[in-house]
Length: 102
Length: 485
Image (tube, rainbow over all chains, first blue to last red; front, side, top):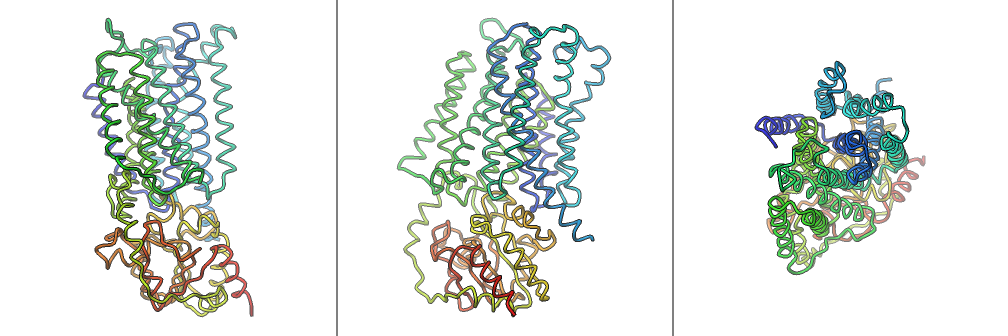
C-alpha cells in the first residue's frame, strides 16, 4: 500500500528528473532516450524475483516463475541493447572532441 | 527483500544498494548536460543496473552454495541462460544497427519494456503472496495494490502496442501517414472509458478475467493511440512512449513498495515527458492535437492552396558553383538527409569547403527528423564536429549574414508561413530563418509538400534555387564540381 512516504519519494523523484533532464543539452537527446530506455528496465529486478528468487519460498515452478522468465528475457534485451546503443552514440560525440583537441 | 533475514550482516550492506542505484542513475542523466562529461553517463548507468540486480544474484548464488543441487536451483539456472540469450540479442542488435534506424530501434526497445511490465504485473497478480503482498480474506489484493497493478499493466500494455505501431511506421512496414476514419475519437473515448470501468470493477472483484481483459483492452488502446499519428509527429510519439515505459515501471514499484523502482520510473517518466513537451513546442502544438492527429484534417484542405509563383530549378553543377563562391554556409538537415544517408557526403563536402576558407555550420531544428536529437546523432556519426552543430536559438539570427543556406531534405521547419500566415496550420511554429540567407539552396526529392501538406513559399522566393533529386546523389555531384580546378 502506498504510504505518504512512497508518494513523497515519487513526487521528489519527479522534481529531480525534471531539473536534471531540463539541463541535458539538446544535442544529446537521442542518447538520453536510449539510456532512459535502458534504465527503465530496472524492472528486471522484480522479474528475477518472480523467475528465480521466489522459487526458494515455494520450492516449485509456478506460473508466476514462467511469466517472470519471459520478463527477464525481454528486459535483458533492453538493458544490454540500451547501454550498448548509448555507448555507441556517446562515442560518436566524444570522438570528435578528441580529434579537435589534437 | 522478504528473504533478507537469511543474509545476516551482508543484509546491512545490501540495504544501501537502492541508494547506489538511484544516485548512479540520476548522475548518469546529469552528465548528459554536456558532451564533455557524457561519456561516463553510460558507465554510471551500467554500475547502477549491476547494483540493482546484485541482491537477486547474490541470493541465487548463496542458495546454490547452500543446497548444491541442480534440481532445486533449476529456475535460477534457466534465468541465467535467459539473461545471456536476451543480452546477446540486445548486444548484437544494438551493435549492428545502422544509426539511421535509430528511431525505430528505440521504439522497439520501448515495446519490450512495456511487454515486460505486463508480464511482471501478471507474475505478481498470480502469486501476490510471493511478493510479500498480504492476502486479505476473500479478495487476494488490498485495494490500493489492485489499483496500482491494474494501472501498471495497463500502461505497460499501451506502451507495448503503441511502440509496435510506431516501430512499424518508422520502419516503413505500414504507411507512416496518419490513418483516420469517421468517429475515430468517439470510438477511442469509448474504449478508454470501458477500460476505466474494467479497472474499477477489477479493484472491487479482483477477477482474473477482468485483469486479462484490462490488458487486452490496453493493447487495443495503444494501437488506436498511435495509428492516427503521422510520420513527422513521430518525435513526440517516441518520447511519449519513452515516458510511458517509465510510468509503467513506477506503477510496479508502487505495487511492491520498491523505492528504487519508483524513483527510476519517475526519472524516466519525467524525462520522456520533458522531451515530448520540447517536441510539441518545436511544432507549436499541444500533445493532445498531436496524438489525436487533428492537424491533418485542416491541412488536407489547404493543399489546394497552391502558390503559383515562379520556381527556379538549378543543377548540382550550378549549386556547386554558388557554394564555392560563398564565404559562409549554413546547412539545415532534415528527415530527407536521414532517408538518403547523406550525412557522410555532407561531411566530405564541408571538409573541402572549410579547406577553401568557407565557414560551414549546421542548424538543427528540434523536430527535424523522427526523434529528439535525431539529426545530431547522424551528424556526429559522420564525424562532423560537435561545435559546428548549433540549435535553433543559437544560430537563427545568423542566417541574415550568411551567403548560402543549404536545406537538405527539410521543409516545414523552414516555411516562412509559420511566421507570416495566420491561416497556416503550422502558424506559430518556430522555424529556421533560412529565407534571410542571401541564397537558399533547397535539396529536395520533389516539389511536393512537406509533411504538414502545405506549400512552402520559400520555393518561390527570388533567392531560392531548387535542386531536385536524392540528397546523397546531389551532394556527391556538388562534391565533384567543388573538387574540380
